[in-house]
Every structure is written in C-alpha cells, then in structure tokens.
Length: 282
Image (cartoon, rainbow, N blue to C red; front, side, top):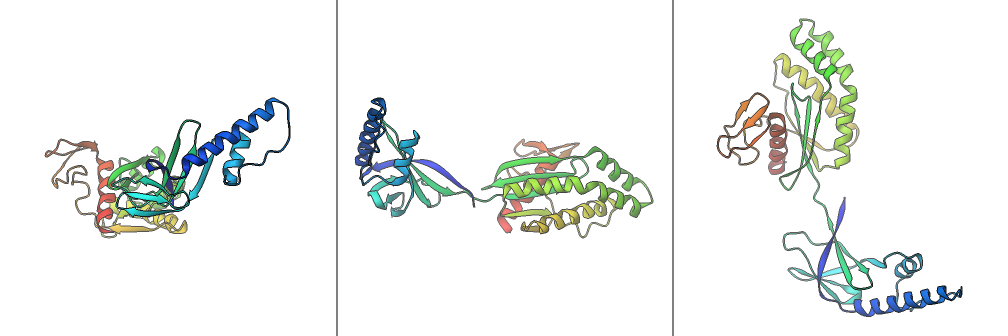
C-alpha cells in the first residue's frame, strides 16, 4: 500500500529542540576539525540516533524515523519517544508514523498516511477502444484512452462483413498488444478494484465484438492478480458524472448535461460513471 508524507503543525516540540541543539553542536565541531585537517574520529552525543549521525557525516539533512505515534485527542498525536505533540489533518485517517527533519533554523515533522487505493472504471467502445478513468474518493485521478487505428479498422470490418467468426479472430489477434498495454497501465495504478460493464447480454454484433475484447481483458487482469467486478451497464452513458442528472444528452463525441452544463468526452463520462458506481456499490 502506498504512503505519503505530509508536513504537520507542531503543537509542543518536547525533546526535539534539545536534539536539534546537539546536532548543531556536533556539526560545528566536526566541521571545525575538518577545517584544521584533523582526521580524528569524533564520537557523537550518545543521545543522537544513528540515522541522524550518519546523515550529518555525509552532509545530508538529519532525519529521524519512522517514529511511533499515539493518538492523544481527536486531532493530536504524540511522538512517544520525544513527548512531541503534533496536529493531524481533520479530514484524514490516522497517520501511521512520524518522520522528524532537523534543519539549522527549524524542525519539521512529517506524518505518514496510507493513500486511498484507486478504483478504475473501464469502458469499451467504438470511438475509443478502451477508456480508463481511475478515481480516488470520487474524484478523477488518472485518465487514459487506448486507440489503435488498425484494430479499429478490423473491428469495422467485423461489423460490416458476413464472415464474422474469421474477422473476430483477426481482431482478437490484433488486440493483444493494446490489451497488454491497457492492463499494464491499470496494474501500475495498484487499484482496489477494476470495474467494467457486464456485456454478457449484448447479442448485437457490436456487443459480441466488445465482449470478445472484454474477455481478453478479463483474462489478462486475472492473470496479474488484479481484482475486478462487472457491473450493471444501465445508464452509465446517460448519467452526468458531475451532478448525477440521469438524462444527459449524447451529441456526437460529447456528453452534455442539460442540468449543470457539464461537457465531457462521452467515453470518459461513461468510464467515470462506471468507477463511481463501483465506488458506491462494490
């Protein structure tokens, strides 16, 4: 699971300022000996952690951590080892641990938070063969369209000719690369789940062609151990992903919402809706 470090407001420094003084003294002493050409090893103050000492000797910014923390109130945690009180974000989950960074003029404390995993909405279509919208907390995070002109041409031939099975196999053969690329993109997102429409009951020629591609996607997704869900496709193309209005209009390549004025690529809006539907129901 990915983590992110966010700088936090220090309410009470506890022992951190005493440690900062020891670091500054140690750095000045080491620098003074270097200037005089003295190569004698200098023992650091016994209270300084090894990670801080090594960073001082290599010229880096002294850092200490990860440090254990405990919750002392709704929005304050304590760094146990140094009795330091730090404010946490009111709208966030509890942090995992703390990192302390000692600079010459100030002390910075960072709290590590586990990032929310994304939910991926995947739409198959004739304009963009594969549209991927990854969301975090209902907001779009990553978007990618996968198009392959030659493959789209094969798909068009499949729809227009009577030799459906032959053309379908040709199309599937040509789709392997784009399927691999799309699933590789999804894998890099490390999603909680991938949502796609359930196309099992689409018996038109278009539906059969898209279902064949979806089966290839499913096989590759399963092979890589990525969790996925098929959801009801009802209204995913007509609902406004911004305001939820259920009777949006499709104008060529655009989705337009009469209620809020939202405009977007129609495939993007559909993939976004698929991700949102899974966010609330998966």
